[in-house]
Image 1 (tube, rainbow, N blue to C red):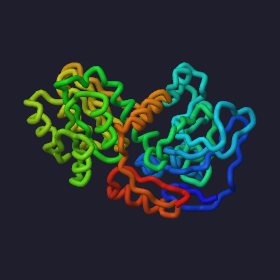
Image 2 (image 1 turned 60 degrees about the vertical axis):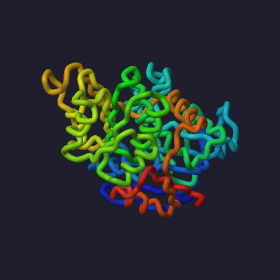
Image 3 (image 1 turned 90 degrees about the vertical axis):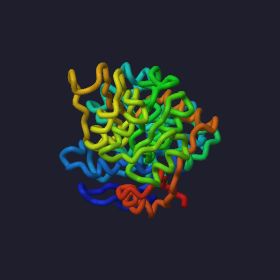
Length: 346
């Protein structure tokens, strides 16, 4: 089968031919219908070899959806042919967070060498993939896998971040969404569907700001050195109650800190290497700074339920599997408006 792999440190992803996988006991073989392309992949491919923590080559793709092609011995509760989405942050399944569905916070994953697909384990950017356990599969129930595969990360991650601040997202509140790309444009839709907060979207791209307005942002602001001042103007000097930074670079975390009001939540989701200084006097009183990771299985079910009700419309640009290296080039250059999706059968 064809697969998109990161093969050597510092190299670009390659399309290669590898043996078709076969499911072992307890595993599920998925015929991949769609695989999302994410900045997290680029972050992994930018790491020095000593930081990777897992061997190469690696089949990429931590957002996956497809049909069940075969079941390993002992697998129950799922049928061949069923169309499913893959819950990506795999854990041990037994520690306290895992038993609560929060495998994204598994206490033993590192110790046991458990990695998410595409981020250590073979991922979805191939014609077939192995899913270690049927509990990682969520039925799509008629949802288009190409249109909705990105919800497994680009929907789940912002949903989890929003849920952390949900009590503050009341009428009269303001939320700043920094980065209106793959995750940010879904976050705006989630905020509109789940809350009454006023949404101010920030981005460097006028095209992405236009997308932000299309999907529900009340205000859009160019994400430059004056962005925080503009947020303060739009909030009559009070600042925002919630800031969701989907970029996480030093300039955007600085903007997040400067745009925060008293008792604000600053949530740094992006992997851009920025930080927010915490200490008395460095932020408005009682400001909370957090850096969450992905989301729970239950939250993925919630996100897909919102998609069923028509609340979410992921803007997708599709590529065939042979075009995957081009998709990564375009993503790295900031030329993807929304989410790039690889369709192996295209």
